[in-house]
Picture (cartoon, rainbow, N blue to C red):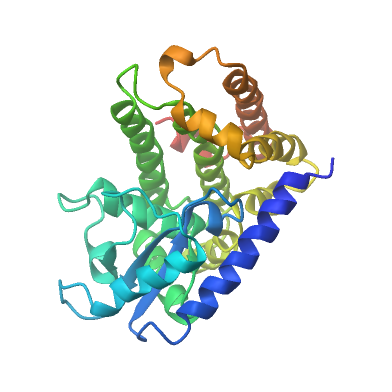
Amino acid sequence: MTHAAIAKARTYSDRKLRSLKELVRGAVPADAVVVACGSFARREACASSDLDYFVIRLGGEENDEPAWVERLAAALKEVVPIEPARGGPFTAVERLSDMVRNMGGQEDTNQRLTRRMLFLLEGEPLSEREGFRFARRALLDRYIAPRVGDGMLPLFLLNDLIRYYRTIAVDYEYKTGEADKPWGLRNLKLVFSRKLLYASGLFALGATRDGDAGAKVERLEGLLGLTPLDRMAEICGAAAVGPIRDSYDHFLDRLAKPGVRRRLEKLTRRERDDPVFRDLKDAGYGFTRDLAALFETTFDHDHPIRRAIVF
């Protein structure tokens, strides 16, 4: 299978990312990093996609938002005119010291957890890559202590990943709880893109069993630099990931069609029998089965990740 939709989305995303990086170059101070997330970072974007991004300040304790951040937002909008949802975790300014210090505490809000996990799992630097690597390494070093040795999994990071994924599921019910609220597109993103992102994180952590803490950090730096689909292929092999790519290509192909996307954006729970929705929902069941089967064949029964995700 050619996976034309995946290839088309990657080409479109790469072209836009090049424009965004050219625009950002020289406009961001050395102590800050602009991080893209979402469909552009995963190389899955189309003309209907918004640009999810936020800023990480590497030093200082200032709480004010620098003036250049507002100018940056206006400039980015010229390349990708669709803005992230208001009130969400994006377009914010986050201090690296807070991201590293407040993991799991009372100040670790859903939005901060979202930024931290997406930075690790799908983040793409729009500004200088050195600051991005510094911030990612700081987070991984915090998650993976020197005591996490050979044969062990980085359980701190694994538990935070599981917490993030379950938080998404709970928030989904909160945001779509009423029968007449738009529901269709959110549902399908949970079935496909959110699930793939979570799975790619689980597989990456499972792949770090061998080696000391330093080796685990280096392994994760390499894996997390790949898109979720490429990450899965790196760990499991391209042939083994074939069925997952097939289903995901179908998902991206449908969402890239403006009429289909608009239809799904307006769909409510009362309209769950809509044929467009049902086609993708049924494909999602197969997608989930294929992910579960791949997990079974990739990690043997004695692998510690099997116990860790249950108990």
